[in-house]
Image 1: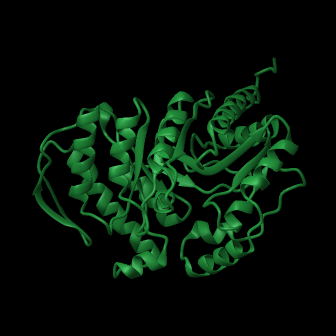
Image 2: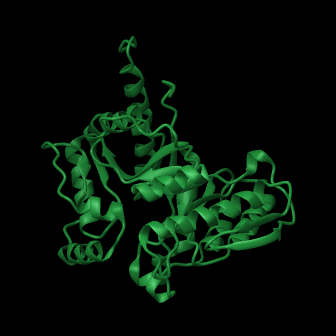
Image 3: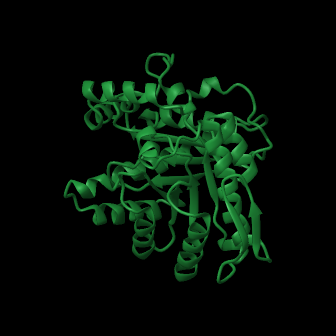
Length: 345
């Protein structure tokens, strides 16, 4: 891997559950897109589950509201046929001349899958994902009609109405915390997104057979560590009810990353790694909290470990977004200066 430490930032669209509570959701999505665009973030993740609005409708709204940011649409094989996904990607790409990225999800919520009559075990859901994503990839790249006879999906002489140029083909991301997830990322040529441990736990090199690795993480950074932690605790106060819900959800889930984040994590006093929002059922990922120097050092360590894509929790406001972007710029410089033969300025 080269020493440039080039990285890309992907934000997350606010959850459409806010719309159900009467909040001006359209304006929140528009604002998130504007912040991402201003700060050079490449995409915004749009969630999917039984209890959320249609991600493709949100993707189209985001495309209409921005000029450069790409929708990263979460796609669950239970919800629609791979041809439907491929056709939606093609249609939106041709309309807006912008890439549509796909985040394949295997289905973590047991009640969602039960409601749809799906009892497929954890690793087999990733086998299904490989077939599913493979058909989507072939529909976009094969010069001939696609025929596939798999265990989960079968198509014969299937083709789309047009072809995409190479520069507009969709990028794929996959949750890559389990061995099954890593295998799916490898098979699909996808970026394997993981839920981070503290950076000092990454002592070995990442598997070079995968195209790329990313981290799902939140960041709260301020001018001082005290100000950052004050902001963090105001945004995510202690929530005993949420902690009980998280405990039950963790016991029910067969997700590897859910089990991993439920374990005790040892970090020194003052370390920026924080699981509070996750443990209190307020967020789905760990956070880094601290001064720009504290956070940048931890991010630089992730960069040196080989992570290049960062899927970020939704910022609280425009200033938060700008501060996060600044922390990554400092982190890149810190990582670069740590290279052998490179002297600090």
